[in-house]
Length: 153
Image (cartoon, rainbow, N blue to C red; front, side, top):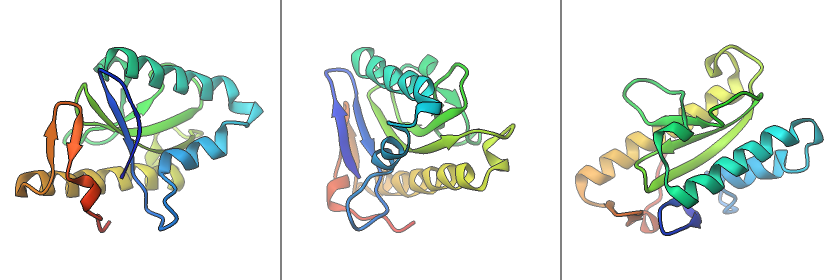
């Protein structure tokens, strides 16, 4: 896991499955930053992340996406076809995943999007286990101990 951005209110992290150190959020940016077809949607997501850094990861910024018992959400909350999936741990901590173009009614119907959500759900389960065991702790807007751990998903 890597820290992507930090403010006085919030820390944004992203997970990495690759040994090359590329985070899921960096893959999302690489795919959509210069994509003219989805530029407006991409800019809406970046603006939401900037607002989250400025005032905190308030629930109203996120669209609930996963199951009732997880914290998987999506950006943006309003319109557009592009989605960025994340874990909203608290108003101070958000873990950014990957995302893509939502062409189906729900992410479950798209294998790529379903995979991104499933990765975040698995990661959250492992994170919760490590929090319970005391290997990782949450201190205000920081996940302490995640740098020393590699998670097997």
